[in-house]
Length: 125
Image 1 (tube, helix red, strand yellow):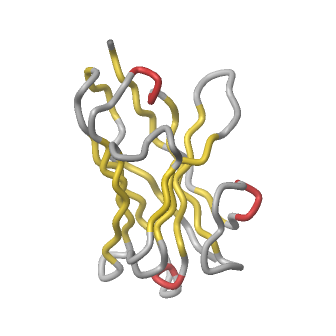
Image 2: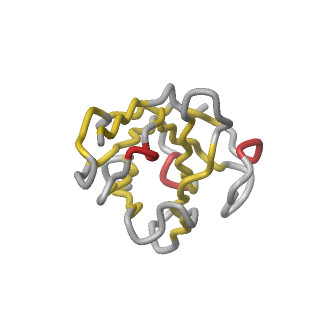
């Protein structure tokens, strides 16, 4: 069983930055790739990024490429999402999720096994 807790969300002006954290429980958390997703009101959950188990590989949705950077510190059981040049359309609840069954899960949310409760990010114009 893996438990995930997101933090770091908040209110920021357009062009600003936030760093989200995803703290994982359990000794095996460092074995899993972690994905970041977001869901805006009235919209479907959207894939944002994925960070491999050791942080050496990352993948991003086109909408955030060049602005968001994923990383992790396995000694702290924590995965990060650095978000720069934020736009109002980035406003959403952000979730992290652990990919257990595969080395890399990619976009489909159903590939992920464990989810956090989410953290709200609001970008004002």
